[in-house]
Length: 407
Ligand SMILES: [Zn+2]
Image (cartoon, rainbow, N blue to C red; front, side, top):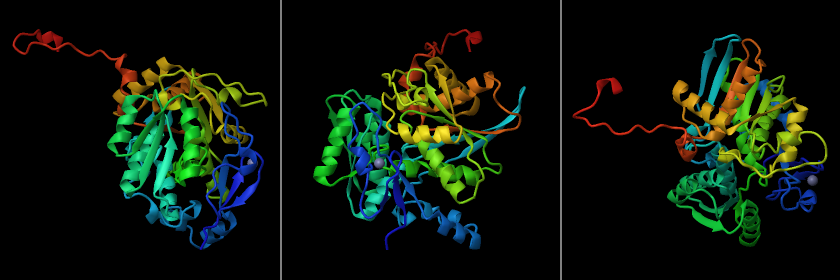
C-alpha cells in the first residue's frame, strides 16, 4: 500500500503525489541557475486531518509509533540499527540579572557526531524501502561523512563527491566508513552538478541537501524530541544556520505539530549566522538578493549560496523568527565557554548558536524565566584546527627538577 503523503513546491505551490522518487519541483527546477539558491525545493505534507482524528482516539499513538505517520517511510524498522536522534537535552537554571532556563540539545551524540545523521538515516531508510542500494551525495564534508557512516551500518554503498579542497579531517571519516570518496576539480557546485548527472545515469539515490526533500524531513525529528523531552514548551530555539536546511527542518517539525494541534504556537527560532557567512539573514526582505562569498572558521555554516533559501526565508518571516550574526572571535569564545563550563566540546558551527545567545543576553532581549534551547549540531573533534590557535599548549617540565609553584 502506498504511504500517504504529498510533495508541495515551496516556490510555485504545485503539489505532487508520491508515486515516484521526486527531488525538486519539475516546473521550478528548470529555472535553476548556477550560483543561485535552489528553486523548487519540496515540502512533504501528510494527511493531518486523519492523523488528528486518530490522536483523538489514541492520544499517545504518534509517540509510541516513533512518529511513523509523519515520515515518508513505511516502517521505522527501515532505519539504521545505530541510534540516530534521541539525543540528550541538558537543562540548567541560569541565574543572573534575568534568570532563564537553558536547554542544550547535544546532537554530537549521533553516530557520526553530527545533526546530519538525522537526514542521512531517513534517506537511507527510504532507499532501503525502494530497493536502492547506492546513495550518492555532493558534500563539503559533514553530510558526506554522515551518509558514509549511516550507509556502512545499513550495508548500503555511499558515493561521496567533494570539492577538491575539502579539509582532510572531514574526509578521514568518509574513508574510515568505507565509502567511495571522489574529489572533484572545482567547487561545491561542480561536485553537485556531477552528482546529479550520476544520479540520472546510474539510478543511484541522491542525498544532496535541500535537493532531496527528505533531508528536511529527517532533520525535523529534533522538534518532535524537544516536544517530548521538555516539560515546558520552548520559547526560543537558537539554530546555527548555513544553507537553511537545519533551520527549515526545525521549523517543519514544529509546523507538523501545529497542524495536529499538539502545540498552539511555534517557538521563536533564532537563526544564528557567522558574520562572514550571513547570506540568509541578510536577504530576508525584498526580491533582489545579494550573496557574498563566505568566509568564517565555522566551516559547517560557511555557505556561499544558501541552497534552501526560499523555504528558510518563508519560515522565518511567517513565524517571526530572528537573525543574529556573530564574529569568529565570538564563536571561539563560545566554544571554549561551552567546553569548560558544561563539558561540551562542540564544533564552531554549533558554538555559533551559543555565541548568538550570549549576544542576545548582552542586548537584554531575554525575558525572565523563558525556556531557551540551543542546538549543538556537531562534535568539536571534527574541527580541532579552528581552536588550536586559541590554545596555549604548555611546555614539558623536567619531572626531576621543577618549581612546585609552576603547577
Ligand atoms: Zn514549483
